[in-house]
Every structure is written in C-alpha cells, then in structure tokens.
Length: 369
Ligand SMILES: [Fe+2]
Image (cartoon, rainbow, N blue to C red):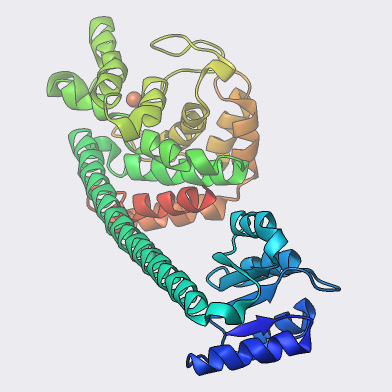
C-alpha cells in the first residue's frame, strides 16, 4: 500500500503501524510523488491525507480514480473533517479514516480488508461482464456467418431461376447473364450507385422471370405475334413483378422488373412511365437490353456490329433511352462488351450468372455501410 502524507513523522508512524500488521508500505510526501510511485510500483491501496500543500487529497483521489479505477483509496481526515470524508466517499473513495490512526490499527486493517474485498468482487463482476461480451461477440459472428450462408443459398436459387428463364426462351440463350453484366458495367461507370448495384444486377438478371408463365405457343412462336398474343406476352412484366415483389431482399429488383419495358418518352409498357419516373436500374437495363438484342443473332437476322448498335442507342438517347445512361454507355469502349460476350460464350450452356458473381456484388455494399 501507499501512504501519502506531507508530514514525515505521520508517514513514519503509519508505515510502522501497517508494517506490524504485515502490510508492505511505500510512502509519498505529496500527491505528485504518490502518482510517480503508482506509476512505477504495484500498489493495491492508497491511504492519503486530505490536506496537503500542492495537490490536495481530493485532487489526488480524482486523478487516481481516473488512471487506476480499480485502486482502493482511503482518505484520512482530521476529526473535524468528517463531512469532507463523506464527500470523498461520494467522489469515489472506498472509506475514510479519522486521525490519529495509531489508536486502533485493527479498525484500519478491517476497513482496508473490506475495501479490497469489495474491489475483488467488482473485478469478478467486470470479468464476468467481459466474458459475456465475448460470448455475445462469438454468437454474433456465428449468426453473421449463418446469414451469409442463407444469402449464398438465395443467390444459388436466383442463379437457377435466371437459367430457367433463358432455357424457356431459347433464342435468347445467355441473354440474362449478358444484360446482368452489361448493367453492372454501366452502373459502375455511372458511379454513386454502389448501394443499388445488387438491385440493378438482380433486376437485370430476373427481368423476364414473368415469361415462365407465358405459354410456349406464344413465347416460342416463330412468326410475328397477333395483337392479342402481344398483349398476353406483355403481361410477363406484371407477372414477374407479382412473383418477386413479395421477397423482401428483391423488393427493389422487383421495381426494375416491373419497369423494364418502360421507355423514357412514355411509349413503353405497362404504365407508360417517363424519364425519371422509371427506376434508374430499369433505365440502365433499357440500354443494356437493346444493345444485347442488337448484337446477338436472332432466327431472322444476324447480329449487328457494335458500331451500328451504338448508333441506334445514340439516336434513341433522350427518347427511348435515358440520356445520361446512354452517354455513359457510349463512353465505354467496345473491348469491355467484347470481353463480356467472350466470357458468356465460353460458359456456353445457359448463360448462368453464378452465385459467386451475385455474391461479389454484396461485398462493396456491406463494407460501404
Ligand atoms: Fe421483358
């Protein structure tokens, strides 16, 4: 323990008394010296005089509580200073002792033992709390991993769904994956859409999910559709929207599905939305979809060259296509689109967006939060 008193005789007597009780003592003649000793020695308890020149006992108490919150601190007061002793306890002292201490050292020892015991219990509570925090942190991590696993399962489900769409609509094989990748490229180049990236991509990936409900006779009809058939075909937008909107993590993607045939001049369907009324993901998709349709082979024509396809989008910008989206698209070089086409052709089968593609989109979003 550390005895702090400005009077050398008091320090000496107190040290002798405590030494007799079997306690190891250090002594300090001022608050400043006490802090230096605390810094370099292992001390369990401080017994400090209240009134000292320089740093007072109360000031020392405040500093010790701040630096060593677990330290036992006992304030020594004169007989007349009992109120101050109580005040010291209010400010964090564990007990106060009244001079002269040597009258009954066993009372001082009892008080000290009690204070040390209380500190010990407090420490145990603190350890327990800390342990609880560790348990909570561990379980939170497990929960996070479980959620991550669920998200991966969702992505695998989406992967299969997207493939199912392309399978039904065989002339457009690989279309879903290409517009998925094209839309990501455009959204990345636009910037500021990091948090929406996953929705933009999911909307593109699942845009024609409603076609699963359209009969083969219409969906795969080789010739042009009659007016009635076209009306039925156009229902795929509403059907897709109704299929997906109830899924909480696809709510925003559902809006893109709902608006993927809208055009900026209001000539699209089903609602005839205009410009900014159309979700940005659907505006991006509109350009990606047109570009893919033109640059892919169709049963009735060969794929058009990139240059011609770009010109068509340039001419339609501000009318069919969103002008800012079209501008961004036109600034992306052909190599980017060629690389995507090569990659999707290499996958050959049904143009899957793999679960890992979808997963990769989640990461920047999470870290951004
Ligand atoms: Fe569609």
